[in-house]
Length: 176
Image 1: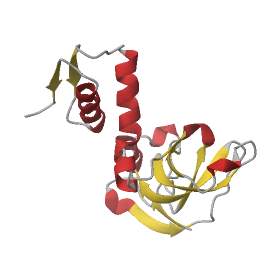
Image 2: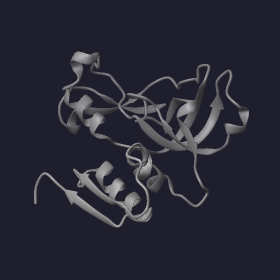
Image 3: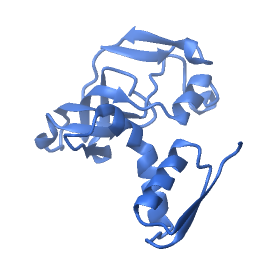
Image 4: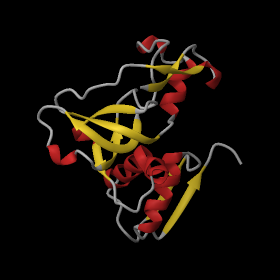
């Protein structure tokens, strides 16, 4: 199986395509044949070496979210997931690969009309934005201030608030 691993910490030039054994889903996990991967700020921080003190080493395969088709399930996972297209949270890595494992509790089925690219774009930023608005107990007709609206989570928060009927959405960014 081909994967992208960190050869040397630093910029994207430190990434390389490597051959690894195909993973197998453990109990409570699914195996996903990836169609698209998400690239997050956490992936960039790991790749740069900024998080090496937390145990990340060269050779690590980044990627915390993928979109693809479930090809196998581990013990305790409903076999009905097999063959379904999903968005999956893989954890702190493993997604930059042709196949990735993910906890069955961290997958979402995708509607048939949603492309892999669009699904991974919504990915965790959409989930965080949704739960942020829910935690704030946002309801239609209220005004919303989104700080840091130029990032993926901020952009999604603006869109979700507007779609849910915000009376006004104000935004801030760190630069013009």
